[in-house]
Amino acid sequence: MLRTLKSFRANQGLLLAGAVAYYSLLSIVPLLILIVIVLSHVIDPALLLSTIGRYLAWLLPGQSQAIVAELAKFVDHRDVIGWVLLVTMLFFSSLAFTVLENAMSVIFLHRVAVRRRHFIVSALIPYGYILTLGVGLLLVTLVAGSLQAMGDESFELLGREWSLRGVSGLMLYLLGFVGEVFVLTSVYLVMPVGRLALRHALVGAVTAAVLWELTRHSLVWYFSTLSQVSVVYGSLTTAIVVLLSLEIAATLLLLGAQVISEYERLDRGRTARADRPFHTG
Image 1 (cartoon, rainbow, N blue to C red):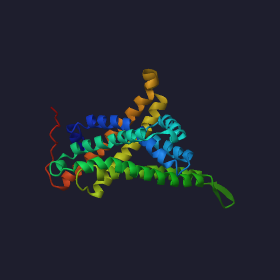
Image 2: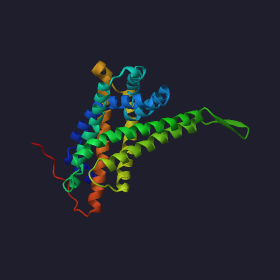
Image 3: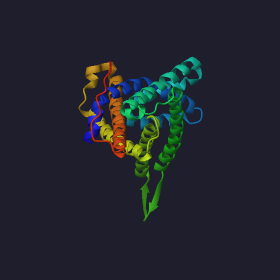
Image 4: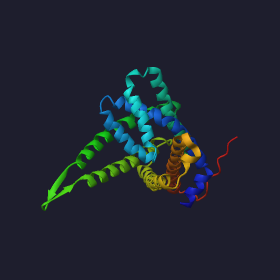
């Protein structure tokens, strides 16, 4: 743990997380708009937006409803969106993945020094992720709809009627957590250069997911009880809170990558030492 924190500081992890968070802020709305416009042709828009709102709250505690309201406006006017706007949104949707790959190359510098990824592959990875996330959201929406329907059912046992609402809520939570671990694992397997051991990717993903769950609940409590951010920032509150949430999430994401990097060094039998600080200029 100490080696991980030292290496993360040496690699300027907080600075990298800030860059990832900024470009994620630029990418998240265009990405969701693209996915919603496409999937709304095959899924009921109300169910789709409900699912996005539920799991977007995992990433942006307390601010998901504002984004879902904007997505609903695009769904209502999806027939008048032109090709130029679609291409523009596709471009901005890919920015966060490109910056994340560059941040990973700093943390996995020992891999980049040995092997570099072809620039065409790097250019195609973001769009592959956009397509994969769209398919994943489609599957999650279908499963979540089934679980919600199950929550409206009940069964009779020993002369008493028991509701399945609690079971349905638990299954929805587990679905979100497992999906979170799956997405993080895929990021750790794809973004770094070279082939990563699945067990290392799972260790990093579970570490980041557990830390984010603890942080997410803390953020929800803070924003609902102690925060005065709306008084300080006024109309900029949503943007500030979203950026803060994304930066914390990016920090934990890169910290999970640093955990994987340290496990790789241990497996390769390298001597225990902190990385040299990453300098620019």
